[in-house]
Amino acid sequence: MLRSEIRSRDDSHGSSLEVLVETVRDLAVGEFTANPRDASKVLLRPGMGLLRKIAMFAVAEAIRRRVGEGLDTSGLVEVAKPLLEDDSSDDIYLRVEYAELAQEVGAVNPAALNGVTGFIASCYERDLQWMRERLTDEDSGEKATEEQIHERADRYKLNPPGVSGDFLV
Image (cartoon, rainbow, N blue to C red; front, side, top):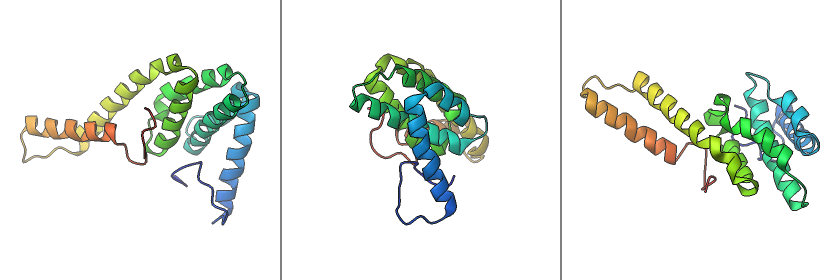
């Protein structure tokens, strides 16, 4: 992925690609604020991780702005729910934006986060499977290996790489 956080803004743009990402990000915030459903159709195409990352940021930022202006956020929450529950959002490069989006949605409509619990459980099971396939220690017994896998997965679940702070609290 090009950058760890979409929010990052550096005035000394390293490349035209950085400028492009920031331009799309800034335009996306405006589009999500004005018309969340249409904006989501454009940015949430399958296989476009960077656009999903921008969309997550843009929806969270649009919610922040609308709350600050005292405006309705229900359309944005409806667009955010599938982002927070879709398997495509289970990507290490999306964790920061996912957490920020969940935080913003939870602040305006805690009930909209009901599906997140199932999403997190599903991600956890995929992490366990991935670890079982790759981290099996042939010198350890099956029980010891499974305990190590659960320990790593639990640690990862509580402290995911790329996410700093308590976003989901």
